[in-house]
View 1 (cartoon, rainbow, N blue to C red):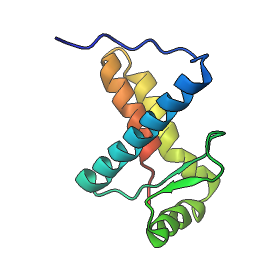
View 2 (view 1 turned 180 degrees about the vertical axis):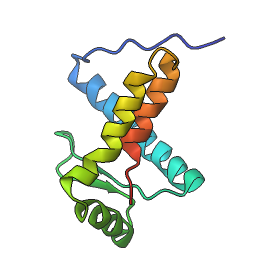
View 3 (view 1 turned 30 degrees about the vertical axis):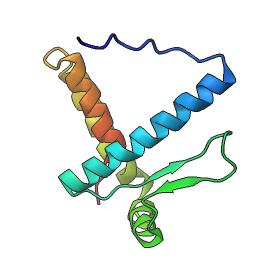
View 4 (view 1 turned 120 degrees about the vertical axis):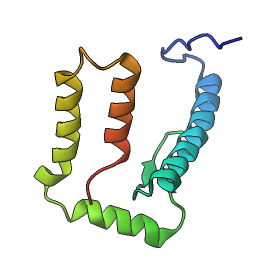
Amino acid sequence: MPRSKAKLAFIKDNKARKNSFMKRKECLKNKLKEVYILCSIKACVVMYSSYEPQLEVWPKDNTAFQNVLNAFLTKSPMERSKFLLNMIATSRKGSTRLSRRSRSRLWQTAIWQWPT
């Protein structure tokens, strides 16, 4: 039996919100790891929350994280945003032909990957 669609709304209960964050954080890291391995892309994540005192980074290997971050920071701001802007334009231009799921995947790709 298919799962019902989750209602996206602010979680008022602090404990429930923290639990949801912790679960989703782990899922996010797992998904990024899968994309990183399957598509052979360079990627990293920096997460900060009020629930934990420190920044959390992925990958844990500091040199891999630094390589991705340096590759991103050495690009000019225009180059950094170029890929994302192209993805947004493509999404809007082809919105009549793209299904909602396809547009969602397109946005996720724009968030996860940038040119190197």
